[in-house]
Length: 267
Image (tube, rainbow, N blue to C red):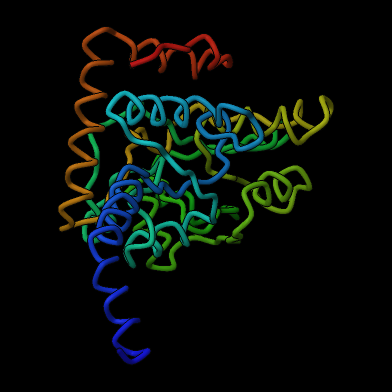
């Protein structure tokens, strides 16, 4: 028998074993949910062991259904691009805008985010409508949505904006007096100020009492994908269980109390 025949016979004998190995690997891969996110304290905090309030919630919901979650930290706009390209199963936490619905499927709402305009206390600024903001300089973050009216004005070039890919740049420009406003989620903004600025610096910054936008935060899943649809159903079912027990309401209160660790419930 030639050497080639021997090799072929060994390969054929090995096929059942290889099939079992590959099936095991595929099952293992399918049980891991890859979620793109970014530091957005107190919702997401990669420097904490538990990853922050929403990271903890998402991980626990999927763990209860037998899934492991791998969180990947990228800039917000890159997360969305990777989701569209199929590199991620989901991204979080995002608002469910019409533009994002074109390339993703939104989960049920998790908590509500309130977008406000942060400003310096020594500048008495007032606005009533989006059109009024044309007179002010505004620092924004790439990949963020600040609500449909603001987003439309921004995309059409009506606003004076300085955009940056770094999360803290807007507040630093505001602290230096180089811009008038920095839009940010209220809970996130004050958490960022506490983390990055001295007491004297953050004492100079407050938020305008008029909200820019109030909108729920979601997980966004790959669109028109059977596996992603299944994951979305699993997540929505877990959210529904938490909501029925009043846990999502408790989480919302904890986030805006400044102490999200008050909410430590398991699904």
